[in-house]
Amino acid sequence: MNRLSINQYSVRQLTLVELVEECRETGIGVLGLWRDKVSSAGSDRARQLLRDAGISVSSLCRGGFFPYSTDEELVRTTADNRKAVDEAAEIGSPLLVLVCGGIAAAGLERSREMVLEGIANLAPYARDHGVKLGIEPLHPMFAADRSVISTLEQANDLADHFSPDTVGVIVDTYHVWWDPNVYREIQRAGDRILGFHMSDWLAPPPHFLNGRGLMGDGFVEFKQIAAAVNRAGYAGPIEVEIFNEELWALPGPQALALIKSRFQAVLA
Image (cartoon, rainbow, N blue to C red):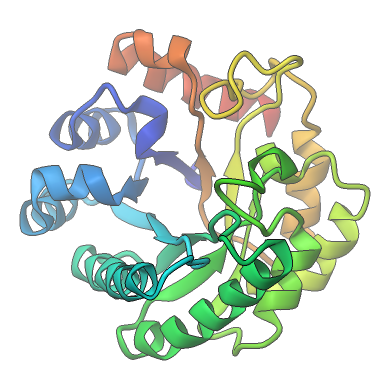
């Protein structure tokens, strides 16, 4: 159980103060945080809350969105990604999750080149601040607007340009469960796996963005994927990240208890 990390957006109905208190009471010792939520609480206060409760941070989401259509967009994106690294360092997160960004005006191929260029620009800054960058491939349905990096193979190809001390990959079951090459690429990633996220795939998805399922309600083979990630050498937190309107409608403590019980069941 000690590997369970609760992604803040899984129970976004809770404030950071409420979430920290509920996790402390239920024995959950790790959280995955989001920049907007941390900003609302204030980074100094957030860091103190976590420290007082004995809760560590598995990741901060998100940086990325590297493809740009104008020079002004490039300047803004570069500044925002450096700010994201600063924020990760401030709250003690070892990892900044990169959602790479959708298609810019120059087209798909050039957008993917921009992702590589953006990571290359950010990596030295992240290294200097003690923050690792985790490339998270998203399901192909998000290629147009959220991530032109759609497979773990593409993420591994990008990460291979950099030192594993700074850049790695995130394995998120919602995004990679369907990929016939996923087990090969998990093995290939090895010590570059910096994060492992869980949620289920419902068919049909009630909503592409906010229709992820609780583990056990859909089609993801969690035991097999978790075993592959473990064999690859990843032994860090397993972050449950579920965007789901029905889950958000529940009282926060009830949603948290439900997530915890499902996590235990699928990995039993």
